[in-house]
Length: 137
Length: 137
Length: 137
Length: 137
Image 1 (tube, chains in turn cyan, yellow, purple, blue):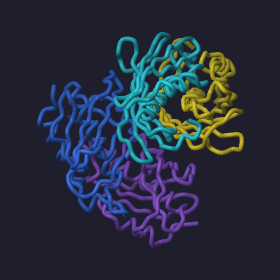
Image 2 (cartoon, rainbow over the protein chains, first blue to last red):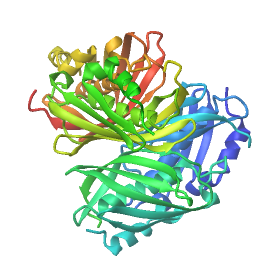
Image 3 (cartoon, chains in turn cyan, orange, blue, brown):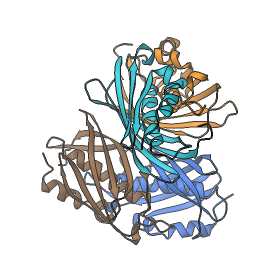
């Protein structure tokens, strides 16, 4: 079970992914893998990546990990997420992985981690998603 | 007690605020007020605002509400935040407010809400921040 | 709109409320009010109230605030909650209030605060609940 | 690195663990293992375990996983936690495991899962803790 390339392409082409340099590399039954290139555009006033950029990365990593486990024509929406910021992120490449924790018929729980270039966890998230029929698919 | 205009200007000029169209309007002892213009760049593949854009807005709204309450030369960093997405957000202006819940000597708890143009709550957050001496200020 | 006394009585009689000294005082359209008497049974090894006792209090305060807003025969289940512990709690009476933030057709978001005897916020929570038809009502 | 039996004994003897039937089995560098016997005292009005009982279990599982990694004479306090309830829990034995995610000098992030008798995840948590010198140790 794996998200088809057309689904990954569709997400990689969306506005937010392009704006923030977010890319889904793959998404299958094991989980999702993402990459984001952090540049000056991601920084807050103290010179490290703004929480919104990392929240976007981990929301996406959880979402695609879930989509890879859904039936054709289904989608998911984030009900809520919690994210811990555990190390400052400076410009450069950051990676992330997402996994499904529990896959319910209506509600799905997932988690995701973002890793700095040195492999250290920079942020970790736990989120809740609803499943829906994706009429736009 | 109010954050001086120079502090607001500094934040409004940072990369992330400019990238995502985020603007702090004011920040004082009552709380912070923000505005964000949602455009196609903020959308995910289903056509509504990506969670990262709203997480960025509410992280910022909590952060500036805190900064307005700190001493000169102090800053704050987001330890973690939780955000609920309660209504879909489509292109247009969205506003947000942030408030301090408890102001500890080391740890501060804050919350924030984002409102659609019709005044409906689109997202709500509760976050934890650490205080630090902002040597870059 | 207010939860009838029979509903409050039903909750006040349940095992967990009795075990932990939890009592719902009222629950109406404004929100819920709770009281809990913290004794030695609530303490962890450092001598202050265990997080579980406060999580139980705030989960309950959110839940009953929601129930007061539902239709007859409906109930709610906690999907998830986040709780910040902002001040240590020692033996004595603690109070809590809960409010609905957004009341969706399927998902409800609520928040709650616990206050020490001096009125200081000891814990604050934000949670997500699902509505269901309460066949046992 | 492992928490000495005297530390486990101290926690197993505290009021909250005894009140709610919570027991730490071991805690070492890999993580912690807990057991809780759910009885009628743990139930809410719908007949399944109250969220507070599971929040207590997972708060404890995270806390002892951290204590096993701290220096002698150090303790930890829960700053905040988020818990997802993923399956109803009925009377019987439930187990839990806790792990440290990131161990900072001041702030520690941990997570924990609770498992029903059939091995299914009943609740999952992600929490933030502060380290302190435990003068009572």
